[in-house]
Length: 199
Image (cartoon, rainbow, N blue to C red; front, side):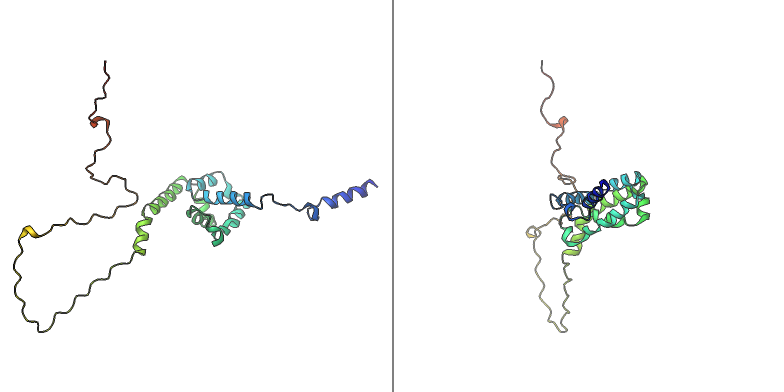
């Protein structure tokens, strides 16, 4: 009789029974935020190196989790990503050769340098493709029988305005004070104030 009652309790506690369906208390918000944070951590080559050094990439469940996280590349999720390099690295992590290579510190540094150079030159490279180029002006063909024009009287040199050549475009990575600036640096040795102790 006791065994019959135990069998009845087991039937009620199985996960397939409708009374034990798991209901997420925050409708998946916590899971969404955790996955978003993890995916964005993948934008850091040092973190990927840490995962490789601690052998996370040897775990098949973790590799499956990385494949699962590719849904972040869909437009309805990509709008939440603040660091787009994480999606690039997530795609690279699908390759076993890349996962193995990131265990070496030299490859980590190489990835970090390439990421830096991308950030450094991104704006200038992007502007090259966005800004329209000026079309070369067409040189009109000289008329066949043009009457000779009278010579133009010379203009005195004092009336010619001298313009400086245009300054080169500044890179977004340059410092606030342009190179060769005449502004004085904030240096204690040249401040002009006597900083010696007074007796």
